[in-house]
Image (tube, rainbow, N blue to C red):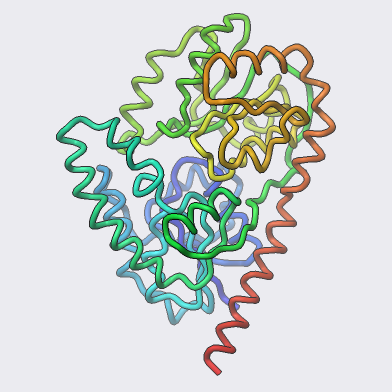
Length: 369
């Protein structure tokens, strides 16, 4: 069986890109996308995966998203593959022409269309908010039209499953994303905390900055970047100006360096708004490091409060208190962290995804008969 995986873009290194490339390698599938940064692919160690680009997108939001949708809607690989998988926000615009299919929801439904819509409106100037509405209202309808052509939906967490039901009134199954725990190791509890995320507004990095501003004896290293043409660029640039001396942005780093940072950090912090799942906290736990996370979204499914870290409200005083507690004795969380991380191992993900694909193919054959 020949499989194709459609994915929005492969640019900055992230959990979504790693998941798609991991699945593609296991299924011997081709990845069909728009923009491709082969340096990022090589940094993740997936240069052996065949990647097909439909063409480059326009580097101005929301024209970037619109051009990606058009590229997926217009392409046709229906005769070249037996099964199709869609990943991320726009790839399912190819669903009408490509069946049988399955959508793996990593951040779907598109958050700026639904749960983050009001937040983004408030962040815009008056003129920008008008343009934002002009884009969202018709595009949301198109988005939902192509969602109707998706045959099977797999959510990456209970949090996403609930959003799919709430905003799209569609059912889904949950298969947690993969973390290859064998890649991670423990070396020491060093003198720095670690944060791994793109510099997007929904990551609420400002909470981390303010917390560490109040903790001058602690140090925070942030791994992650942003695209200049992305909607996050203004936010990121303004954020960086506010960094205190004990907060350092490392940008995008190679895989081996990231694993080293996990192995040597004191602990990990994540502050995202309703993070769909969050692979980074699991990677930190696989390295024996406790996590300070917010009591929202995927953190509720990955971090065991009081056992593998601490879950708090997204408020600076609570974050500061949690950092102080964990900093006193991070080693007491080690064994439980590693045990919890193994529940999300890559083998479990691949086994479940293969079963879902086989079931989808079997159901299609029954329907044809």
